Image (cartoon, rainbow, N blue to C red; front, side):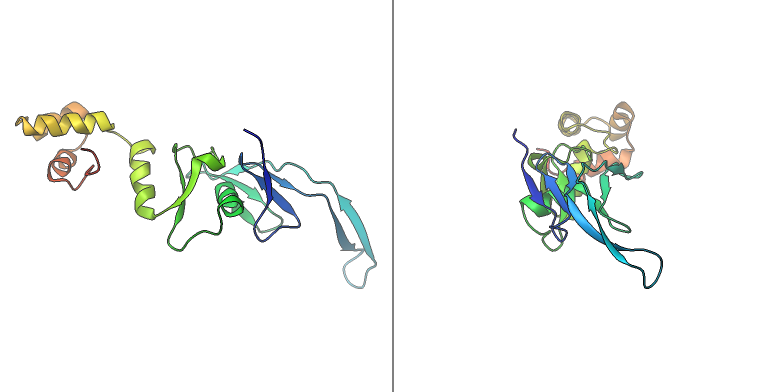
Length: 173
């Protein structure tokens, strides 16, 4: 896939973001002052460079610093540049569940509920696969004990009952 660069929303003259999830600063000239007050103005040329992302400890999402006090999530920058501003009540979702994969093809705006559902299947809290849930539903129809199923699959019995009554994993048929 060919890398395409677009300006960062709100910082168009300073930074660009690519469809492959990279962020770079642009070549620019900056005015500075010598001394603290009343100094002489002078200009310096700053060569653009690829920014090295940091990582959020709790989630693994990548961030970049766009100057002092301005840290931004890379996945937000990509979507804003290529899709548009974040719609109200939406979040950025990673289709494959990998918070370090900030390619445009892996990102989309979605609701909190969609994000929670996605995290259930490929997030760090997943215990049951789609196949496990299908198997549990089949075994419950065949009158298998929820307590035994809970032990077999390593989950709490309330999870099995939630699957049975449709309050948990209702999206699996």
